[in-house]
Length: 72
Image (cartoon, rainbow, N blue to C red):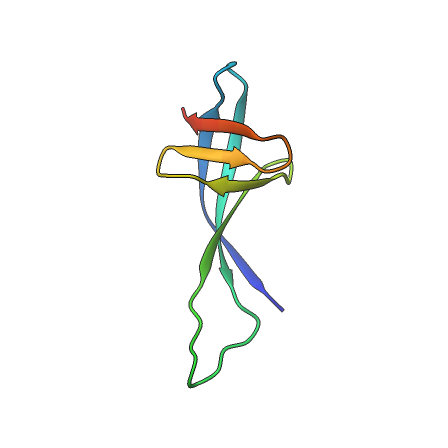
């Protein structure tokens, strides 16, 4: 089973002024092997469950709607 750990919440808004909260979480893999240890990766999503992609330290892209949000 994949393990998720919420690390922080980031308040963002788009150019039209719509505000959302992006949830950053660590995703730990299901399996790791001694010869190939696998570290965690970060996942991003909104409080409503929409998947987000981190573009850089200040910008996120909602994948379903192609909206770009900036840190507020």
